[in-house]
Length: 444
Image (cartoon, rainbow, N blue to C red; front, top):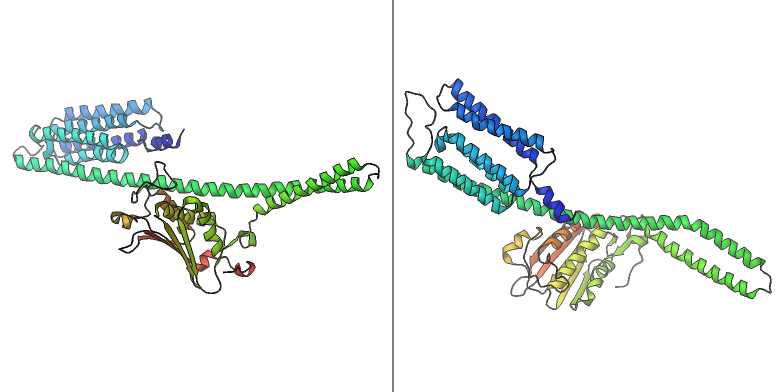
């Protein structure tokens, strides 16, 4: 099953959810009819009302025994069942006062459920069905159950007002619910993509550990082989030069194997403060810039701060997040990208600035949200369908914030153009304790 298919299946309405909601509606309808007819003593076609209530209960029972609890409805199936609920409620209201019945507001329930769970075209169709039923109930209905010696009158203008309130409420609440549901779904998809990135980095770390473990296990037999080769070389007669050459070649290749295993063992180092796992600020910037050197954009790097530059533990999330921001800047830059790094005893800041078109002013306050279009889709390094959707910026921002950073995105002040990404870490969160003395000072 593909990711798209899985995502679609997970969003479908569960049969169990719909059945529980309908049982709640059936219970409420039955209680209302019994209370009005037997407790308040109001006369209305209670028998016909229970015919429609029983029909819904029968449908629920049939669906319960006909499908498993985990069954998820297709979009059209769910829309048909919600449409039935609208029509069933319409018949009950027809027998109990039409839109003059205060329970007419329950028409909104199926529309809201559809707005949250179904495509917009089906929600629109259900809205049209609800409006049609409500329109009929504005002019055609049995009188509202009331005291026999009192006559209630509801002018057409009043009933039209109730109809308008229902229509407007369905429109506003439906649109709002659909918007919130879509945003939550997009955010969940974007977070899933971020988790995939982190999972990939975790797998790479696990592979490093496996390589180190394999190197450790192979070291012992390789040492035994080396010892046997030396003993054979010492015991060889002088008149066997060919065999001596073969043993010398075997000893050379064994030594090479030991060197390779030594490199593999270093991959699994878990000491974050070891020299192998430390980066200077200069090395960090070079590692994120180097893969983009062939793009054809000039990169200007500057570093400023006290004499003790920050030293940080190698962090795949930081490397990926900064690399994504640098790649984004170089994709949209016209000719130049500027990377400024400065630090103090308390903070470390990296600013990435390009001279491209910058971000659209309408979305400046929403930068970092997933699936947000704000820059042209023509890019130097990416031509896929997701380009320009803001997912890369969302992932980069999420990863960097998990490392303790604050990420700010903005445009360059006019009349110049371009985009700016400013990343600031508390130095204590970024730099391992006692790391600086263990890393040799680099020449500036």
